[in-house]
Picture 1 (cartoon, helix red, strand yellow):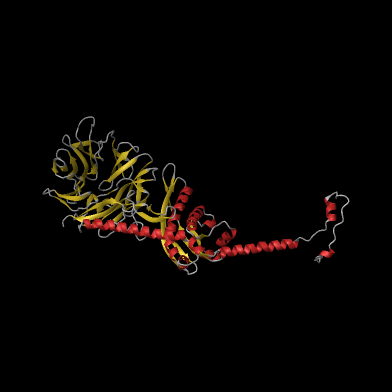
Picture 2 (spheres, one colour):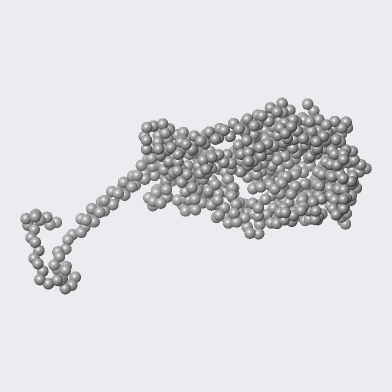
Length: 604
């Protein structure tokens, strides 16, 4: 290496007589310099910067969080749904003041790919916490013409503290649907991100390392976590307020009944009574999960998949969102109208809604086996009724959303239509099965006249099929809501007109007897022995459940509350009446109703 020259040795260059003629002449005039020392210095500087950057990535930060949620793979493995979920959850964590690990740096991806598991990767990247879940969505491809994918996910989510080696567990569940599977996965990822934050935020804020910051004096860190502290505080307050509101409203309803009523559904349920059988009852649920949204900073409700379930009569049921809840008979997006259960059987008929793309008539049994008897993208099926024995199902059929209803009977084995009453009026007043093959229904044969409603009977197995009209209401009367006794010897209807009340018709003589029902009646139903009729009766601010003894004509209210008590059904032994208790949701009064299944003794 040449020794540097001192200033005294430096000589000014001699003036050039003429400019150089070519690059070669320039090289001849300018001596070459050695450049590798310059590159060495630059390399050292770049290396030092890399070391600093890597240390900043791998130094433990008490607020750094690695999101490692497996949704069709991890995000660093190339899973687009997992990346979408991690980005959304990471964005919410960042808004609260945490430092989510981001995947833009190749060194981060390399550390994740080379690690044996997410915890090892988190340690390598200096994370204090790892959020983990393994979501393996159940994929349901619905058989509609355009194609429709429904995804269902339900899994534990854990928050692990890497310095302490401790973990806490929550649970996330949700569903989505779309015509394309990729789109359904994207929707599921967005939804699960908010659920995951709600599932871990309380434990995250309560961890000693985070509490040391929130209870400390470092102004910058306190300011950084101010959004998280506000979020956690408001979330806790709103959750407590909601729990208190549900409990208080439930307590008030129970107090009104003065011990006469046993409530079988949890305080926040939205349960519909499907039917009763030996030892229990069938129910349709529409539960919700509450979580605090980081986006709206408010308590929101997440609708769970609806279910049809069998429940024992002697115990209160947990919410379907409870991990320990029994497995239901059926789970799906939406049950359209009321299902019905088979008399003395274990099957339920329901109308299933494929996210608005199609409707089905579906038969499901207590073992969980289900079969779609009919699928239609245009028709709207309403109030299916299974015949005793389960061979046939009757249903209202609307050819389109605003059309008037026809009456249709299907063979549940073949799905073939065996009877159809096609009307162009709104004369149908209800239907019920008289026995395994005879359907009774109310209609007006000719609405162009002032003809009164007829009670008609059709044997759906007889060919040629004929409609018998053995009973007709009196002029000016209306008949509604027929129900039959177990032995088929009696039919009960609600009658209005000059002599309003409850009409009981003998099917041997086709004569009737009307029992008074002051204020009106609805949803009449026979006891198993046919000796009593339970029905809805007007109450103080709502409706109550009353029982009529046919032998004496005595009407006795067995409930008295301010809520709407409706849809009565006798228990299989006839000793109790089950019904729904409906009132406005105290947390979301404009959005939702509470509907709890309850029971009351026929005799005190």
